[in-house]
Length: 499
Image 1 (cartoon, one colour):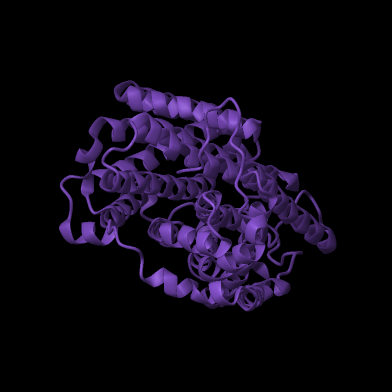
Image 2 (spheres, one colour; image 1 turned 90 degrees about the horizontal axis):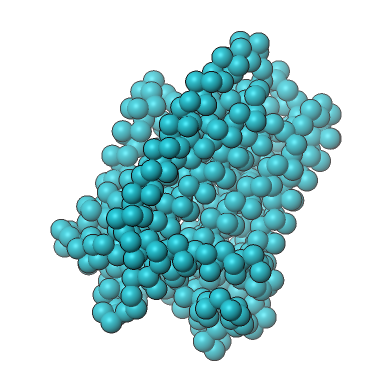
């Protein structure tokens, strides 16, 4: 199978990086340097064509890239704020600095790749807005993957001093990163179904950014962790260290999970109704647009045709999500348990963001989604990106639930253990993503800032309502069908689902 082959390849790459840390770091630096150089040459070669296209009045669905501080000032402000947040979460400055450097280097490499790939999109060059959107998503994913990787590494050192070698730990953590990145890439591929050049360009930029994050997680993180080990966490901040790496069981999440565990049917129905009510504002969305720009996606000028196109693209993204998760989990019920809550949360976040933007920008009609461009762009792009963010949260949680179920635990006990065991990591990841998207709303102008509002609402809903009520109740109702132990893959040496 493709997934099994990729997992075996990732094990080899991560093991090589852990065994040869200096070579792995040097390899990644060479990749970043070559990517930035090639991207700069591509930008210079096609700059005249893109400038002529802009002067000719070509439709640009994104308006404005950054605010008055400029790209350099924006990067400096964002990096400083994120470094402070990561220091608080990891309780030490060196690992926080490592996560920021990994994310920035991945974004730099992806920017160079995107500039080369953008040669295929002559009418839509790498504008600051598109680059900002890809950078925001890439930075958030890079920080989250690095945070979870280091979090597991530090807990392993504290709980199991006689743990397996660095290569084994690196392979287990890298497989989790591979699955998350592959699912994100597959979900984003749903934008290609629109047949629109700009949406395809945005999808290409996001996919390349996720690929760069995955490559950095397979080289830099295993190499640095193997090279420095426990020394990576020194000097540590005493108070934050006790809060971030406590060994006792969580106290808050067992109480939050109690309604879903005791009454799963009532909890599932009530939480689904709440998500549906939050998505109701989408009914007032005007697919024909009212801003004087292009009126549809893929050249559709009729409102009904545009609405059908948007629905088809959204449905294709959901189906791709289900297919990718089925391949990852090797279990259709488990994939369904992630896909349904993620799709509901994405629609609810779009509806809630519409209300927020209507209040935030009262002079703009609600039907235009608060954007200055075609109304069809915003909900479609927002839904797909919110779906990609949502799936990342729940895939990580359900993976640990399946691991507990594979050891013979009942559905209720496995669900509670999986959700409580990942509560710190998921909460930290949600904090990082929320911080990055909040910075984007303030430092990025135009549609990038407004799309970040949708992503913030998606993170908030998935980290609270969906994780505490919808997901556990659905997993318990699926029972043994959703938590059935999986057979190990033959001939790959991958016999465990541990992360």
